[in-house]
Image 1 (cartoon, rainbow, N blue to C red):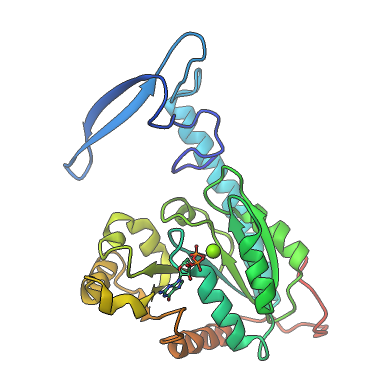
Image 2 (spheres, rainbow, N blue to C red; image 1 turned 45 degrees about the vertical axis):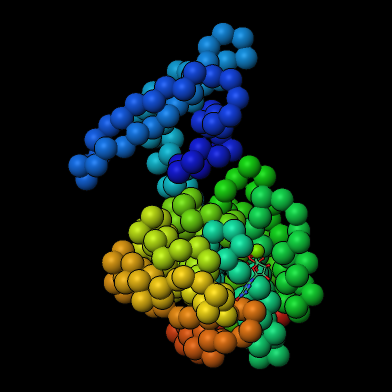
Length: 290
Ligand SMILES: Nc1nc2c(ncn2[C@@H]2O[C@H](COP(=O)(O)OP(=O)(O)O)[C@@H](O)[C@H]2O)c(=O)[nH]1
Ligand SMILES: [Mg+2]
């Protein structure tokens, strides 16, 4: 179950179409704004509920806290293992189609002769992205989350067991395309990298602040399209810095390769900064076993 949208939870809110009586109500948030919600309730045979019978709101909050606490524990173990093995793990987050896989393919082409690379691909269905990554020349494992809208730390642990990235590897985790739920789930990464393409609008950092707050770096992708769009780069930079004053921002095009140099330099700096515990056995074949 996802704490943000209830995915994977049989009791998730019903889709807007289908039977049921729309039940709209309003409340005033802590920020003084009025929020309107629509729930659908249907009762009797084939009933559709947006609240679990017998699960009180207090109990629901407790369940959500337990899920996050368990995830945080597993993420901490992942992080420790990555640090011990000098693996730089980066969590790529974005909406679907912003260019995560394209950017990874181009990054792999630039780095595959210089550094060991491994990729965990998260999508609800298909292994299409893992196939693209394998063809580009990196190790890859695909995770299909089914109804899940984000990767969690346990899935990453299992994928790392299968991938066995070499000591000192760069590990990219391409999360499920979604600007909401992946913000809440630590995977044990060194940091989150958020990709926003210029076709998505300058307002996204303000609309999805949790994600832009959680990220260290914003890659503004598809900049090759700027001449054809009414997109204000300065405005998106201002919006991103309003929610996260410390966020680094780079303009890039996975299609043309423009802007790749600063991104590759950033990767090299982050890799150099990874704390590597002096290993008794520096055998490059040694694999992290989480
Ligand atoms: N014009 C342009 N298209 C891009 C760029 N990066 C990705 N795309 C296209 O955007 C679409 C989605 O890219 P993909 O890498 O699959 O996005 P993902 O869902 O975030 O992994 C594909 O058609 C790509 O060819 C870019 O920099 N410029
Ligand atoms: Mg992808």
